[in-house]
Length: 207
Image (cartoon, rainbow, N blue to C red; front, side):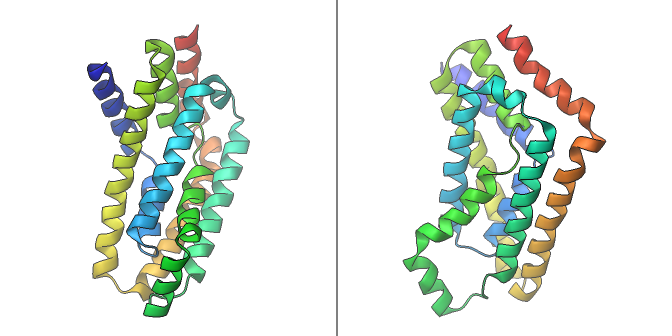
């Protein structure tokens, strides 16, 4: 089981580092919100998405590309608006977010939870579960792999936060989220074949 854990962790971690938009979303959020709030938000979201992938892998594989693209696009655009309109850092604002930390966690949680459904990480988690019949091990490995990716992205965002003025970070982070939204919208149009082949892995494993 330990070997399966590391196989699943490494496979999902590497696959998620290639072309995953959530990395940029987390880095953008880290420039505007507290690291603990962002970390709690994306970890909870990744855990839920992994659990759904393991329990309903075949359903996720059949999600229409238009539904996934629309949900991701809207989420990225809303995240851009939140980043843009969040007030600049000052002691009063920091005290407000510390006293309402649940609301601050909700923003990164929703940004990750409602975007990128049916991505390669979820497909790999569902495929590995179907192949090895060890849902608990795959869940723990996949969630840890996604959280590791999130921590790396968080570190990048915090590094930028320390080195770049907030007046620059705000428009750059918001613009990045808008670009991700546009990419999500046109993704099913420009790369339908690769998406279809990836989703076929689940059917091959479960048959």
